[in-house]
Length: 260
Image (cartoon, rainbow, N blue to C red; front, top):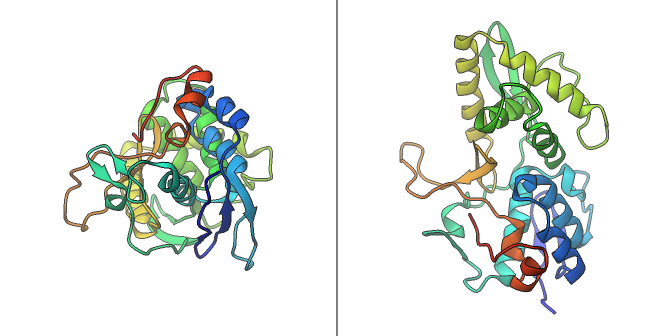
């Protein structure tokens, strides 16, 4: 049995446990396209204890930011990887993607003005990312990176009087998100491009643990470099498959996988 070091951050106080073989095989059978859903199930399987040490602490994986979720999965990987603790990610290492000691999650960030409206940014949490994932392929003419871009912007950018349902507890969140994505898709091109720039700048300003980005597959993390420098390593993810044994992957109908 693997013993895990406690994981302590500003919002997390977790003790992990080794995944049960039945859970591992079940997770291995989930398609890679359901990355966020698979991550939630994995975290629910391996979090042995989650303490609410302060009112700011989060215990539900669906309420954690996508960066926090990635950090917890990476913490597990650091205990099971043959190249731990600074495990390999393609041609790079885990440390290439980690944003120093930055752990602070900014609850609301004043992003700027577009189209006569003042916008603020809220973090992207697991349940919201799952909702974006579930809508993928469901909106005509919206797919791939554009889908994820619209979904993240719709989820995270808020005007002053926006009344968004809670993505963790409110079953109407998916319908709200769908309509909001459609509204954004109808913005004039110049306004949308301005909003995208504003969004990316706000995401960069509020980064924690990792630099979040978007590609055709969903949420990814990019190499941490100086603001004026160019990343030389490809975007990374921490797929659950990297935490599972070859046996579990084979029983789940997959081949061995490594970090993307």
